[in-house]
Image 1 (cartoon, one colour):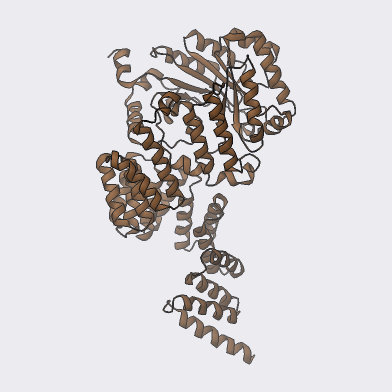
Image 2 (image 1 turned 180 degrees about the vertical axis):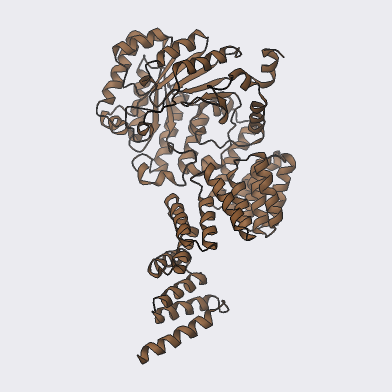
Length: 602
């Protein structure tokens, strides 16, 4: 079969990132690249050229290649690679902090044939930009670089400003936008949302951690007002590169980034090919091969690539953490502003999941039902409606909706996982195991498939099998709260209390308000006779759940262990008042009263 025939089936690569290094000479507050040391296996010039050459042998349509870092200009062959990219007929792009662009480098950039240069600039206030980028002279270097580039490159180079929306620069973004709009040397400004860096799997509530205190915008309403102004400016012709649909998505993202990344639908296209600094080749985020050992052309047309394309087609909503900053994931203004039924359904879908996250299940159900009235076979709306029923404890209705969703698409791994949890909660463990296994057959890296299996095995007292599933989930997603929690529960079940405590503490490092982890700690400390610490955990839990009889029983046992029998009796009686027939409470009260009488005789 000819290349043309092959490409008619697979499609052309249309966008490509080549990461040539992870190292950087700045110490930016929002990035961890500067912490990366030299890598012995870092991509070489010849390997990067081999990759581009291979692309040129079968790609017949326009292709953008983004040369990235770290700081890509740190590599002395970066511009040579851009020249090679241009020679092969592709469009080359560099994203840089501009710190290394002096007059000589500006001349080299002009000679390289580079098409687009994107410079990071957070503010026109030198103090703000220097603070965020970690060096006192980085603002002056960036501004001087823009002068040199205008002088030597002129209109042959498209110059873009990249700006991350952050707490420190929130009041200075409009001034920067006005400056870009008036500056003839700069083609546009592109805004980015702040992401957690350095992790494959984002941590829950990462944006509330101390690390991001000065970075994450604290006033959501203020962010929304700013973005509304940016949308107005774009509509009036300002040089803002982001489409309106992406700017609107920024508003949703800043309400709750965890929820946005988990629930918002965006199509991950199957025409994105990437090369990382270690030589790994990716197709739409999945590892396809390695430039050192594989032939790219053969990989593109391989069975493995077709399997990745199939998965991209059936996964439904894309959940890659960086999708919020992918302009290609958002419709252009003319399409978005038409408000066709499909786009209206997508907006309703977002609203439905927002209400679901806020536990407003009635409102969420209304939104999902709106979609289903016009599109009864919409699997994602079925999924959302099923989740509403599941959270309300209407498991039979939830199961019915999940089954209808699977009638539309039997290969939706997410619905299989949700159905599995419904069966688990209704004690139909064999059916639950079957659904979790189906989700893993579709995607072996489905976190919730492994976690669900782990909890099923734990309830079936197959603790070693449960541990294996939780450990596998953590190998894939080291920051997974439910997997950590499940592993801690397994260790607790096996009375390996020290290991259990370690896992529960890791859960709390991810989410300090996870009451299940506090509960696990409370019982582990009590069983290992660390009564004072256990009392602290039970008291924390009672602030959240003041009418939980089991927590009062736990407190009673701790005080009994400390031989403070009067306090023990008081807490046992509180448990009894909440649930008179709670197991063992009468015996505990009688035993403590007897011990009190013995103490008084002494």
